[in-house]
Image 1 (cartoon, rainbow, N blue to C red):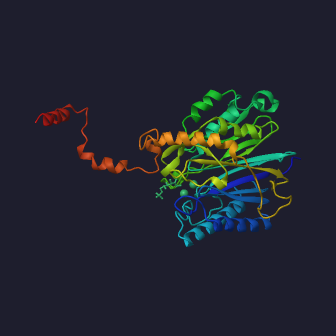
Image 2: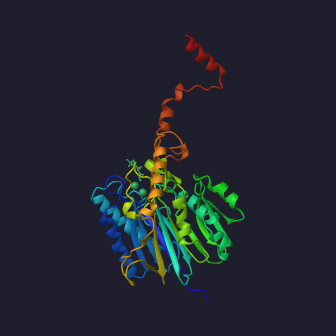
Image 3: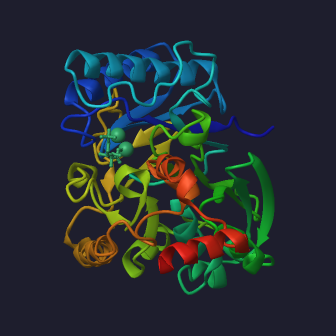
Length: 395
Ligand code: F6R
Ligand code: MG
Ligand code: MG
């Protein structure tokens, strides 16, 4: 008989922040902690950790209830409701922003918050890495995950670890048409990249080991803009990864963030490209042009469904201390490169490629401008009209 599967869930939302879109108030984080402490006592979840990146509250939860569980999602929903209420009472900015419905229907999908969940049989030792990002969109993880799982020049394990060498199944989601396809790496690597290069449509949802280890990585791909029917906010996605022993090592997961300056969409007004800036959650306030897009990475060991960080063993109530991978001066060079690249993009002002393509802009005044110009536009295929225009010029 196989062992019971543990589920790791991250559910996140932006429900208001102090000084524009900067950071949630500490009382909002505390309220979430209290609600999850209760959920833990009631046996809904095994363990949890509450953190944030920029203005997004991220709830890490472990449990044995499987993915999309009503009680687990319900606990997260309650956290965001309470935090939004507090934000409203303090007149914080964008209070309640990611809560798109009054009625909870058993699952946060389509209701505003983003979620990533994976279920697996816990190994003898189970290192977990949680990437959380702000001012960007799900496909922001496509480039780093491609480097980690498809590129042996990043992950030497793909060459020298017999189980990693068996390859990975990559589930790619078409976030516009709500479709998915599973492709195999390394055999279909170039075809996979041919899809993923279009970051406006395709994003990696899930990566599974082909050596029988189960899920390796899962990304929250909820397109908040499309869910709401109009662009309400960016997705600010999360990615949960399992590491080591036949999967990429912790160091292989981190390497792309040191060696590559990666441009991602969603900075300022959800409408600009900027470079991923690796940092600690403590340093994740958006301080430059509402950004730049920031990414944090926190690590825990899983211990019989409980999170184990640097805190004393058996610590209760979410008082964990994760390993904060992007903290510290090792990352100064990567951060400097991200700032240089982001400054270069800013030098282009409101011109592409600094701004996104028209279909991806969160804000645009173009329809209004075009409406006003309707009677002034001349069809260049209409020779008569053009001649008339030229005659006018001669006059
Ligand atoms: C929000 C964000 C910001 C806002 C910008 C304008 O997460 O990324 O860049 O888009 O500050 O916000 P509003 O329209 O609320 O004034
Ligand atoms: Mg915000
Ligand atoms: Mg945000």
